[in-house]
Structure formats: structure tokens, C-alpha cells
Image (cartoon, rainbow, N blue to C red; front, side):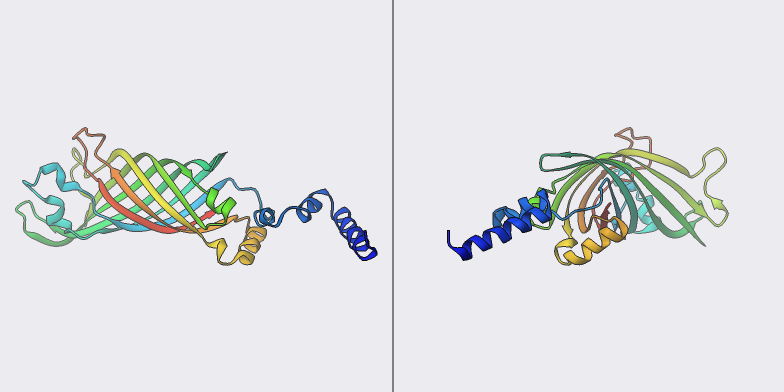
Length: 252
């Protein structure tokens, strides 16, 4: 071995020894694998998301087209659904993460109140809907974690309860014997895809993690199929819809 090569060899060995076993193994790792070494992150257990989208409850399907009480009062325009969800990412499995969670939303329809004869009363009637969901899900984050592709497909599904109540100028509508409020149970299915924003600003992502414990941030788009019909009982207000939501999600 030549003197120059010998000197470079001992410099490399000294650097590896000073850096410690883990760093030494990274220095000697082939370049193709070095690109997949993950930076140190804070512990990750939860995901929080903020979502919005259109929603048109299928109330009038109960009447099979014979009547359209919802449309005649509130119209056919989509409502604005806003929601927040919290998932516990409880288990890493090959390819991704399993989660369970809870979500809470709100939407409101406003229309003209009518007298029993069908004449507009000059006041408004308001339908408030409070969806509460209990999803289980799987995030396929292998592409983002191991390959560097910033896309995370996922799927969620579960049961939900939509609480609803109708207000007029005097408060909750209806009568003492038949108040205009209730709840509709059902199920939902929600496939989606998330865009991991760390890919675009890795330095800012590391600072966000170090300062606030946020491992990853995402923009997401999700389809939503909600079968909110009391599991086919026919005894509840039907609030089903097929729609979409989008928003921002944070893992921490």
C-alpha cells in the first residue's frame, strides 16, 4: 500500500472511530443505502387532521320522489362540511401503519320557515348536523419512508352517528311530544391519498419536528361514502351522501 493511500485509510478509520459505531456504519454504507438512512425524529403516535368539503344529505330519498320536503325548504345546494379528526397510530405493520380514531364535524342548512299551509312565514328554519365518526384505518407510507416518494395512500372505514336538530325563531322546532331533533347511525368508507410536504422543505420539516414534535405534515384528498340510514332501519332521517373532503394533516 502506498504512503498516500495508507494515510487516507488511517484518516477514514480515525473519523469512523471518533464518530461512534452508528456513524461509522453510515460512513461505510454503500451510497445507494445511505440515501435511505432516516434522520432522527421525535416519537410518532398520533395524526390530527382538519377537513372540509361539500355535503348534500339525502333526506328526500325516504319519500321515493313522492315528496321533497328537504329540497323544498333548503334547496339542492351542497352544504359546507367542516371537520376535525384524531387518529391513534397504534401499530406499525409491513408497508404502513394501523390506526383507530374519532372525528367530529359540523354542517348547517338554512331555509325559509313555512306555515302548516305551506306559506313562507318570513322567518328562517335551520337544520344543524353534527357528524361523529369512529374510523379504523391503514396508511401505506412505505413509499414515503423507504423510497422517498411523497405520496401516502390510505383507507378508512367505520361507524358514525349524525346528530341533528332543527331550529326556528322560537328555538328547537317541533312539539313537546315530537321535538325536531334526533340521531342517525350508519357506516362510512373513505379512501384517500396524502401528499407529504416534508419532501419540498426538508429543513423546515426537521425544524418543525425539533420545535413542536410534528413528524410529518400533509395535504390530503379523500373520497367519502356515507351510508347514514340507520343501517336500513327506515325509522330515522336519512343523511347519506357520496362526496369528497380535502384538508391538512399532521403526524406527531
